[in-house]
Length: 128
Image (cartoon, rainbow, N blue to C red; front, side, top):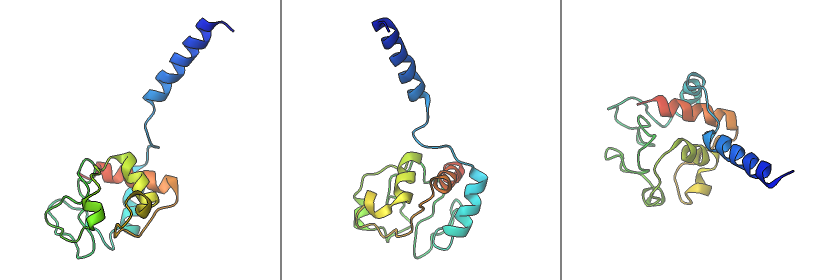
């Protein structure tokens, strides 16, 4: 194998990998059902809806800084100080193990299944 073919193969592989999303794409409709079943006991989802006493409104969460909504006062100091901006990849990591990403968070519910997380994140990304 020539050096040229090795370099060319490496460039093609790098181009393909950079075009792939950082996380698995999910199904927003399936995610809506999961959010309704698993998340809405604590969170609300509609724009302008007052958050519950337990958790903030998740409408528009993708792109928002963690712990930053002004209408929810009970964020943990750990989450407020995390400087996280909620991207789909960051939400996936958080949902897998909230306390691992943000030690001291009040969020105790995790989602072990990668497909379920991808679906939930797809829904949250579409919920603007």
